[in-house]
Length: 144
Image (tube, rainbow, N blue to C red):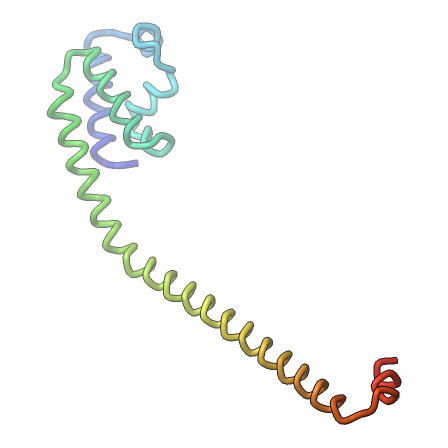
């Protein structure tokens, strides 16, 4: 729940109550679920929906009451983008550690496969080298 969405929801609710509109009436007029109207008013809509849908529902609700949707939504977008940028800086360090760990694991697996192939090759060369000195009769005995 963001503080800005909580403030917007509070303004809308005050405006709705002042005009004596019920959420049921607004829901029917906008063809929007009461659940979403309540979430807008209590500032928790962003917990359930992506930001584009949050903005769309906010605009719909603000325009219904002829509130200044353009400035309110642009302010919301500005504050949300600032919040995302702040979170992104924090996540960059974590993401780089995850990537470096994945690279380390990948490199280790490649090295392990190479080592196993090398051991297999050594075993194969030793068996062929050893059997090349034997006669055909002794090779048959070794195989059995």
